[in-house]
Amino acid sequence: MSQQRTILIVEDSPTLAMTSQAHLEPLGHTILIAGDGATAFAMLRDRPVDCVLLDLKLPDIDGLEILEDIRRNPDPPAVIVMTANASLGTAVRAGAFDYLVKPFAPERLLTTVGNALQTQALRREVETLRRTVERTGFAGFVGSSAPMQAVYRIIEAAANSNASVFITGESGTGKELVAEALHKMGSRQSRPFVALNCAAIPRDLMESTIFGHVKGSFSGAVNDQEGAAARANGGTLFLDELGEMDVMLQTKLLRFIQTGSYQRVGDLRPCQADIRFVAATNRDPLAAIAHGTLREDLFYRLCVVPIRLPALRERGDDILLIARHFLQRFTAEEHKKFTGFAPEVEARLLALPWPGNVRQLQNVVRNITVLHDGKLVTLDMLPELETSITALAAPPGVLAPALAMGSAAPALAALPAAADAIEPLAVAERAYIENAIALCGGNLQLAARRLGISPSTIYRKKEGWGGEAMAV
Image (cartoon, one colour):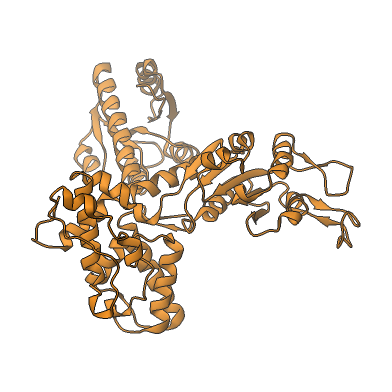
């Protein structure tokens, strides 16, 4: 087998133990030998073992006690019982993978151990997959969708590294939460985590905020002041909205990242800091480079490990998981009685594009729990969301191409000019989606991309429309 495993032989006969060891050594695995129960227990505690060859008749303990103890392990090794007496039935019922009747042929030993190791590997792979699929939350995130599972795996893999990480994603998707998870799960967790929002700091104060300054270096500098670099020494510095930083200052930041050396404003003496850098932006970094607002060399120096956070509309049923999480939390905080959402509310939540992402959903659920009460959240409790006709409907004349093609999609006219001309949002939404599909020649995947929603959202809406045919 390609992967080296550990096999423990628990046998009080040195001759039989060494003979079995000699037969198994060509497999290339680590072979351990314990001559009694106490030694076996010690070895099982000290290191992970994949397979145990267990003699039931030991000088100090019944082998069944070892077997029962192994079975209580959350990740137990496969146990093969070796015996010449009538305890085989008891051993198998107690959870042994297989048995060998002494004396046994070398071929039988190799086959049985090989099967045990292969089964053990498959069991662990299935368990890992099960945990991944069932993981509905991670490091403060709520969600089990495939895009988020990929994010979780990258965070786990990168946390213990010192490599710089560059996070992209729309506002409200949780970029700072990723940075905090990288810090808390890594080797720097006991050191400071310092976060700076480059868009929230005036440009003339940005250099001082990052590097610090000395007294008298500029008007208002009445004292020496350490910057984020000094505060984050040994830990993590998170630079959010990096593209908002002045390009000249980006040059100094690049030098700092490359050398670990910087200078406070007004100070000629260099300072040193050991920092793990995490940066983020809600814009397309390549477009920012093209427009000259982000230095290309700085981007590629920071983008060692890229992480893209999906928009909420790309996460499918995560929308409901997150909404339920917030409902439970805010219900407790506001001392309300909500237990869930009505089915039509859940359908509505899934249909919305959520331009503000998780932050917007959080605010919606908080609004509901503050202003209303009851067992279920109903449609009339939903606040007026900014997914209005202007976000879903086209300006006058945009439907002409579809009508020229003979599309059966209902036409959306200009925005209503009178109150009695207003249609329900669901009607206008359906008309616009069907028209988009018609304009895309019936290609639902393309229409979803043009609409900025996932194809699964359109499929869910189609189901919600019931048996009525959808114009495609």
